[in-house]
Image (cartoon, rainbow, N blue to C red; front, side, top):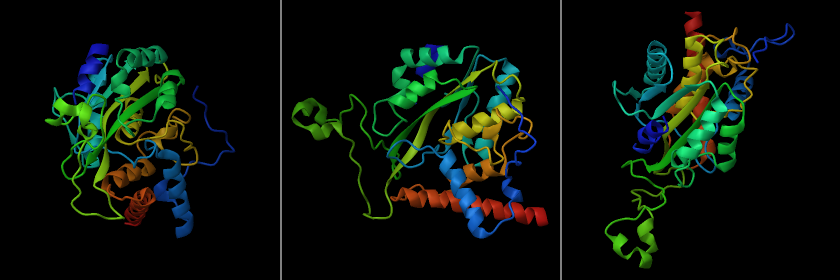
Length: 311
């Protein structure tokens, strides 16, 4: 399995809520003033979003391919189909059968051991060495050591939005033909990005997800339906989600392990977040502006939900 992981990716206790706890807030049912709604949305984004340090929010560019290992074929196919459907709903193109996976879901009876083994055997899959491409050494230690029913690790790539060329150097990179004299030309080791128009508001460098690894503890998820599990994996695979996000006051698939009876599928908050992520402009140089775009998109989703309810 370790060889499959490297080849596939380098190549390209449930507690019911007490009776006193308020019900999680459904996006479509929010009836508050505009300012209160904006604050709710802002807090949700603050809790959920987890961009790499010093980088903007990353997302998939056009195409994803889902692979599932160590599950019965019919269950694996369901997960692939459902995650691909959610991806298609936000404008992505699911890969055809036989595609090389860039979202890999691995089921195991010992998730911590599997995480440690994967990192030890395929370190470059998890930390490729480029600046801003992952959440860092401490987060990777948490990925291996923290007990979670589902754990995930994502790698993103800063790229030129016009050409798709890498905008960060990886260990061993050298631009030809200068490589022959690289010891005298340090610039040969740095990618060259052509700037077509200078701007204080926009940047030509954007962040694209390039692979996601999800490890599922089969014992810990046994109480979930296939739909709940698939939608949870879809949420944490298609966006950079904070594994420690506190979303208990919101109706979200991210609460499924704490309150499995209250959420069956992706909620209005979840869908609006994903849609906002993939509809917003990525080229804002000011990252707070990019996050504001995401919040505005969620607000529009709330308005559409309210209109649909009235109709």
